[in-house]
Length: 68
Image (cartoon, rainbow, N blue to C red; front, top):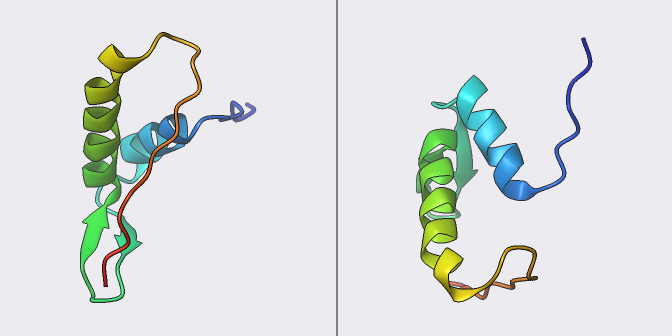
């Protein structure tokens, strides 16, 4: 059985959340962590928030603050 090719980041995160939801996905320099499932929820929430701002197929960029 072949593994389907994942081309979009949200698909990668969703796939990982189904397989290893409790695995740590992000470790910040200050030691803060988030799991794959928490990251999936954040990605999904962000996509839902932005869905009303653009049409399907539009290219969207995101800007985030870098905090230390």
